[in-house]
Amino acid sequence: MINPDLIPSSRARRVWVRHVMQYRTFFLAEWAGNFGEHALYLVAFGYGLGRLVPSIGGISYAQFIGPGLVVSIAMWTSTFESTYGAYNRMRIQKTYEAMLSAPLSVGDIVLGDLMWCGTRAIIGATLMMIVLALFGLIGSPWALAVLPIVFLEGLMFGSLGLISAGLAPSFSFFSFHFSLIVMPMFFFAETFFPLKGLPDWMRAFSQMLPLTHAVKIVRGLIIYGHVDAFFWHLFVLIACTLVFMACATVSVNRRMTS
Image 1 (cartoon, rainbow, N blue to C red):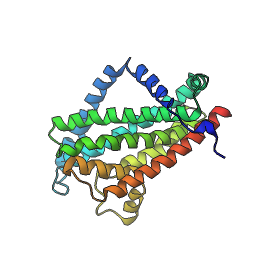
Image 2: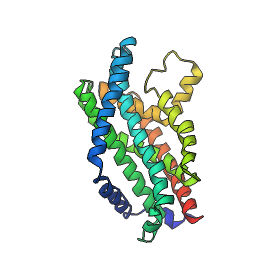
Image 3: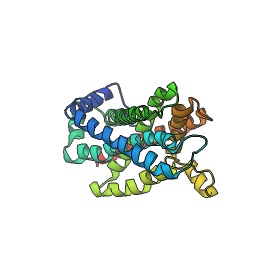
Image 4: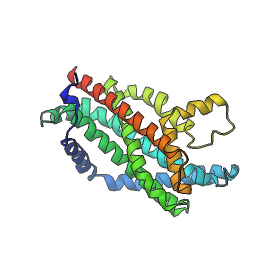
């Protein structure tokens, strides 16, 4: 029988509002730093390394990695928020305990946190897209349609991070999360190089990574305005997100009741 405390309600938005109110106190400094960092990524990889790379499928290397940077930055942002940020709220500041006496359920807290992870992913991706636009690397007005995809990506990686936060005995535990989950996706989800021509096992491994499907959608929308096999990629993202969200709720509940 499903524990009713694990089922979120409309009160989850109050958790999201709490995070927004806190974010208002430092967002300008973060945006300034992120904007400069995003531009540096693009210049260093797209135009520095890109001078040594021939065109890929008729587009420049800067155009190729631009969407990959949009997706990867959204992944990093939501992952940091749901690992170090969530663990701090859960174990150090005891914010989750205070929320449970509000009263909010574990399901409300998890969904509110994940909605905030999705919001942070959109913020990071939007800043990166502004940089791409300034460099003339947006090829289609359908680029704006990537924002719901990025939000879904934020939910997915936020869920993975909350699973680890629920299991982590200390901050050091997150080294495993980044080494075993985040970094393989960062390098093998076709963010920085196409998989065409690589060994079959590497291409098969890439197709099993949910980030690959996010990259396919975002790259197609930003550059071409359409995505081959769009509904398949979207289905994989939604399915993975729902499974990870359920696991995250169970993981956080076990930590809070242990």
